[in-house]
Length: 427
Image (cartoon, rainbow, N blue to C red; front, side):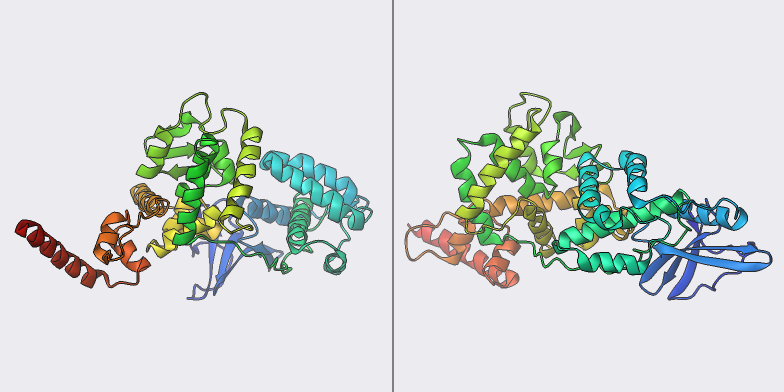
């Protein structure tokens, strides 16, 4: 969003810029501002009517995109200067729900549209269907929340859909701007905790995948691709050969916007071993069939490695965990994962692509090593130095896994090598 600091030439007097409380004004709708107050950022609309300053808080910046904030601000201005354009009090939420879905469906993916429709028919319309869209207040929403006999996740999604519907009602003039009764309501914690794979878990998964390679080569390759890139399942399923350019896969239609999947040597080697029998890398054009086969295989694998609750999406969480523990900062990790929320985007919007590519290479090599089980020698007197040489881990990763001091281990390894050279020379 093209924003600008306070302009002293403007007629509207605004808050002075301070360390923890200042306003940045929009270049498109000059009355719209992003107010930064300590750790909270909100959209505000400020203008003058009849010699008096009018200010309105539109909502939290993380919940309202720039384009929507501009529309809300313009709608508020229209209401101030055109009071005769009031909304009808007769439109029910059930009537408006159809318009909401029709107006906004082009902004959503098919799965999102299905989910919103399900929330409307299952949780929202039974309670609010006959209510006037203009008269629904915060108390009504709180009563509705308390009466929902669904999981915390479903309750949160239903609240988000209702909030989006109310914002659209403001844009269409059925409600006053800034009157969303869902704004600021806390979402319930779902209690869900993601599963993570450690080094031991990766080794067990590698063994299980190897045993399935002959029978299910494409499905195993798809799972390994998810492990090594941290991409979303749908992104891997829709990946086409034409999207791949050297060490990058350019996705034109990711979850929220186009993005790139950066691929290190392990990923490139994996793809090089796949046959090009169609346009798609893994699905060969039949994505539903691939999804069913991968799901069936994954359900067996996770039970086999003793992690029956491990989801395929948890491979993405594990990728991020490995990246952070490898020393990458959160901004780089966000770039690798293609996060699109405002906070993350603001942090890595100008991230150097070479840095992201190098990061992908580093994480991929680490995971490739983790997926290659160490071949332990059978003799009982094996040394730690022989163990290191038999492994495919980098020295820093090996030392971390075995609780060793890297500098000391490097020196002792050099001394051990010298002793082995002398022993062989003596023979």
